[in-house]
Length: 546
Image (tube, rainbow, N blue to C red; front, side, top):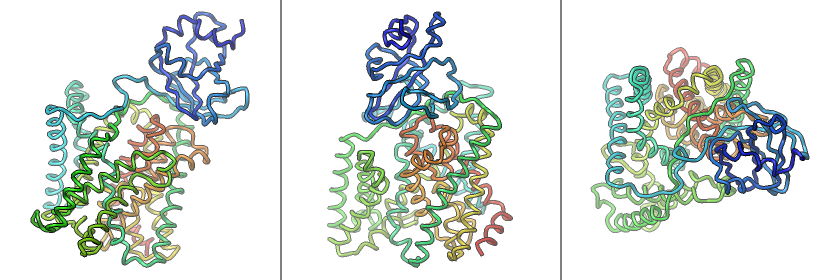
């Protein structure tokens, strides 16, 4: 019998009883190992199936599969080759022959659908679930506020949220050593809070973009062009440094890949949520128009409709087709929606745009605006890094050489190259200092520039978000051209150059890179903060800036 006949695959009893699931998506070609039977000829056969993998799903095959992805247009007219392989822990980049061409492919290890899969539908929580979310999130927010006040009272400049993250991670590690069940109970208790933060994470970056017209008003046009050059060129350079460092170290240590712990994904936004926030926006907009100080101050009165406009922009933007998102990213739609609401209110009330934006982000705790509420979660975001890192602790330990070396080298390169390029092209020293932490997440970037006197924190936040947008739109194409096919290198390079937004964009299409993105995303900010907290490092950066 011909080895390549498709019936040979389906007639193998062992294969039919092997639980595995293949998910088929248009424009992608899927490959999976054939689990060998007792027949030696079957074990070495390369079985060619002309059928799409959806036909396998009809058989009810579920479980784990080694999958290689490659763009294929149109699918699945090419024959799909299924290669035998027993190695489910090693992810090399073999040469795969399709009968048409031979070239190296990127391989990934995915887990089956089941309890670990991402939520696909949203339903409002019941009373118990809602209380669980409120309590768990409230504990994290309260801990962040307490640490911030304590550090301020003690005149400690080190980021308080970062200290909180280290404390949580240390407690989890100790519990895992002596009482693993207790460690998992803590993880399960805070899971609703971590999922809430993951779901709304991009919103916490938006205020900096919304008030960008006010932040850049005093920046000369020529300086703005220089900043944009540093932003784009610096992102590409940081990507290359982190990616190639990871690949080089990986070749030296030769550590085999193992499956990552499944990362639970937040639920998508439902139509009902959009309708609820739309009703909030209309009602609060009318109230603010009728009485601008109905809630005591204009900032508090404007807060509901500006917050609703921001949330609606994010919900609508996240529903755009992928080709639209490449041009009009959801976070841009989010900022645009808030600015549009501010323009509309400023026009109808004759108060002007500047007054409305001034009430969007007041930076006064006693009189917060919508932007202050959103940015108030940034410290909580840092604390929740502890849960992500603990969940992937085995992965961190196994690939510590690649992860830590890449993050450290990329962070040092980012800080010092920004300072050097800023001086080389003649950018004003204080503007250069303000954009030093361009590759570090907003929460920690703001903490870093607080070490330097006279830095423009609004510009810092805006540049960080814009760097993330550049990475979110171009990171995959850039890495493909550079030949960064290893999931470890792709994850580390993305997070080290484009922090949270780049991580979200890559992990949506390459879930196998998500654990490395999350680890590098946290460690880049941590190491950058630790580095800049050293007076000698700050002095050396200021010396380079001029």
